[in-house]
Figure 1 (cartoon, rainbow, N blue to C red):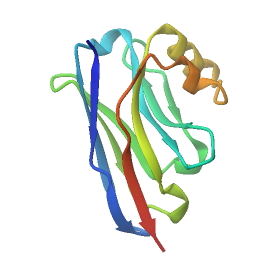
Figure 2 (spheres, helix red, strand yellow):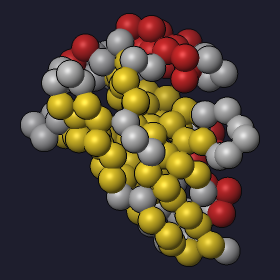
Figure 3 (tube, rainbow, N blue to C red):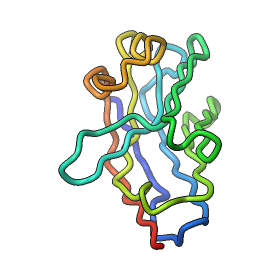
Length: 132
């Protein structure tokens, strides 16, 4: 059974950094895209940063470009989200996610509004709070 275990959320002040981690079990990164979504109460879950190990395709939300970096440690089966210069609008519950060919296709085609529908596996959320 595939499991995604996310950690690293917390409360920070604007301008500070956090690193989220997601350890994956029973998942071969080579065949999947993996990364992070976030959700604010009452809003649709949105893709933040995703990477496909199979072809190197990457998606990064425009509002976090230059501040957030997604990376994968294949040896540790772990995906990270380094978040720098956090802003109050980054506050959300962040979810680790993995998906196969449908998610990879969405990344390549930048199908941002439906990307969350192409996720095969979700981790539990981790809360990020940013005070101004």
